[in-house]
Image 1 (cartoon, rainbow, N blue to C red):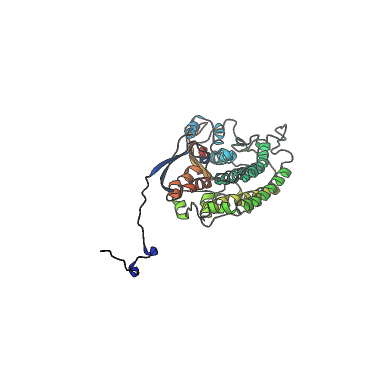
Image 2: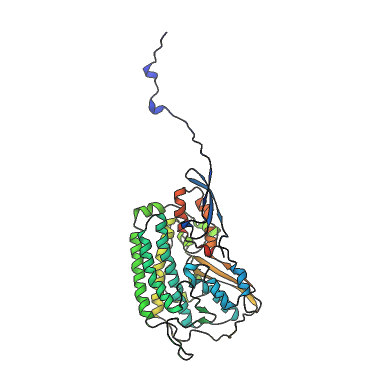
Length: 398
């Protein structure tokens, strides 16, 4: 006997539900060590489920060169050549805390003019490093134009560094007790030492005005781009509590809202003579990390212009022995490098070189945060998060 259904009791389609669980297998994804976005030979072993990352393990050591042990069989002037090559994007800044540590143990007072020259060149190294970031970071997200603009603007700064130190990447310019005569200064005598090349003040002022223009251009071209903002805002958020717990430093720490800058809290260079601000972020995301570095370029240019206008006269080198022997003792000197805190713990036994040397680099501590930042992140955001940390593998694998 045929039966008929009561139309009043038929289920509506909107009330029907389908419960289907799609099971996907976990996958191990190797990023690097040969990858253009790892800034060197870094390998990340990522565990992913679909598009979501649930575990990341950084694998280091592919570029280990043994700097700390090499320093034990080098004299103090020779170690200066080594440390140039740690963070090769800002080699000049690497020299400062090591030289300052040796001077502290030897109780040497560096002439004020030499201190100003060191400060100016350190800030030029910071600007140069941040130019590289403003070219590389947008490129990793998919924007090509900023790379060409950043490299063109960076050339002016590197030309100034080369005119003084003789080197664009590895200057080896600082000496215990001061600085050496400028490479482009021409013939010198003991009575008339030219510490800066002719026209340096004029050329520097023009270059810094160009830097200020470049910063404004980047803020409009990169910071105002809707695609860039969509790829970086609320992506890779790092809270101030976690940043402090992991020993993160530099622009990454300040992007998380921590207003800590060693230039304001240490006397390794005379920064207290100048007026400058500390840019900080609000959310600690990829966008804030870009913003802080770009804003720092403006502050560095302001510092350099102030230093040029108030440059003291006088010698560029204190009296030191021809053969450098650092008295027995130990010290730790740290500095605010472009990528964060860089410090040298020096133990001296009174010899020609360090008995022991421990190097604290910014990038090593900064990439330790990667497993925390990438947990739960989407796979397409991995490159953006990694690029926003702006690390250099020479600064990691020492």
